Image (cartoon, rainbow, N blue to C red):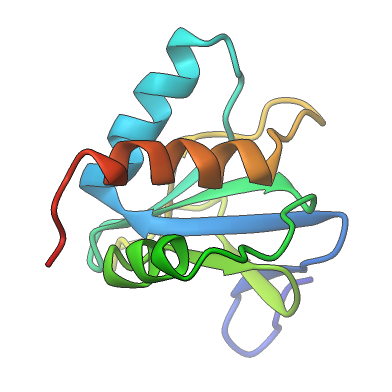
Length: 129
C-alpha cells in the first residue's frame, strides 16, 4: 500500500512477517544463514536506526523459555506478526530511512523460526547482562 500523503510504502503482516534486529547481530545472522544455504534473504536496512529487518514466513511460534525471551528483548530483536511493515521506496531516499540490504527478488521468504533461532544461537554465546 502507498500512502498518497507521504509516499510511504507498507505491507500488512500476515503470510509474511518480519524480524528486526540491530545491524551487527543481523549481519552475523545473515552470514550464518548464507552458509547454510538459506537464500535469498530479503532484508531491509534502516541506516539511521542501525537496524535490519528480515522479511520472513509467519511461522514463528511463541517463545516459552523466559531466558530466551529475555535474550531477544535485551538484544532488541523484534518479531512483527501483525500490523504494517515499512518497505524501501523504489526512488532514491535522501533521508536514507529504509534501503534494501538484500532485495526481495523472488517469492521465497525464509522461515521466521529459523531466523529467530539463529539469532538466539548467536546470542547464547554472548553475555548480555
